[in-house]
Length: 491
Image (cartoon, rainbow, N blue to C red; front, side, top):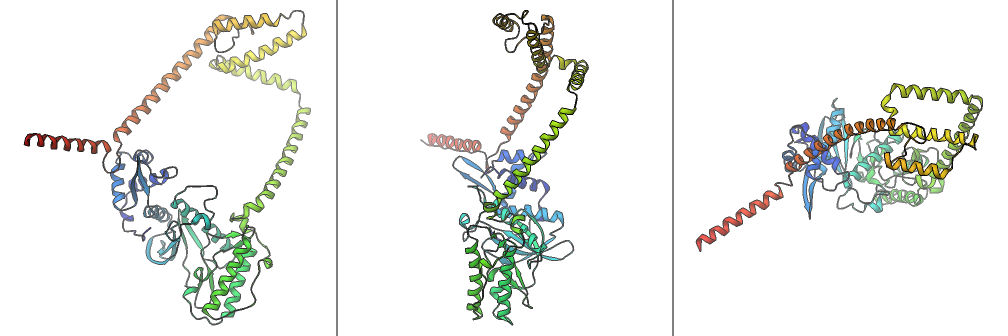
């Protein structure tokens, strides 16, 4: 969680970035990523992931930890910064990194320059600081999740802020222009001004007060509430033009506690003006005065929207789906009535016969034989219904069929009795299926053997931390034996 140090960024190789990315991918379902998994994900040409991990640990881009019987590596915020900066540099959004110009309870802000030497602001989200750890009570990033890393939560905060900033900027709201983002890093326009908390004198406090209240109401007309609208998140320039910043905590006006958040924003501005400029006004907006004119909370999926509005959207979608399905069923019925069914069945049977002749192996497959059995059984049943006098007793037929199944095909029905095929056809079909299955099993054995060989190589190449546990135990045993032998000689 320290300051951003990009001195090593230019010296890292592609293989080292590959290992960093492997640690990041492994942290999706591992708190500590084991070394064999990192080596498997990185898939380096000549191995060497353990050596690279030691270098990355030395520069504090990854951290090796061991808790009980679990040991492995985790990505630090510095390593996460390097991965984000590498992606932004590849896109051309970041060319150089300058000084730090701001620090907050959940982010750090730096000056950067792009390929055209234009200065921008880089915001790195740092969720998990000691002063801001009660995240479940203050943000809804977790939603249904219980245990996630601070890196992932920082990424969610950056994604939400970019979405809010993009939507508001497109609608003409005074916010910095968003440029690019990756992981937890957000590149935006550099605002020419100072935070309102550093301003001690303005030309017209009443005009500034009215403008800030209008901004709160205007944001509510978009369907959003800032939830942190105070002097620390308001930038003001020399001409008293206001720019609003910091948006990850915004909620919808349909939120359960929307009125409380709205009144808190208004009260923060009133208290600041009374404390700093000794200005107090009886005119201030109420939550009931807010009229929705836009649905930006729907576009950016603001917090609180899904609780109140998703049900109506689901009902509308369900109605549309049922109407579309009814129209489709009606069209299918009309087509079924107008099309000649007998000609279609004849064409399908002819096509099936041609396909069987073209592919003799398919004719002897178990699926095809089962389908033939079913068709022939259906044909025999229809023939028996037409001629009830010639139909044999069902008990005798089932008994003979079971006996033949036990002799020839113990795991599926035979075709010799039902379809009238000869036993030679059954034997030939069995032999063809056996040869096909033997080829498949041979290929499977080869693949399993390759997989076992690879697993054994990985086990031999496994390293745990700075040295393997086996090597450490052997060293300790050698030292113990040497000490005992020396003691015996002295005695």
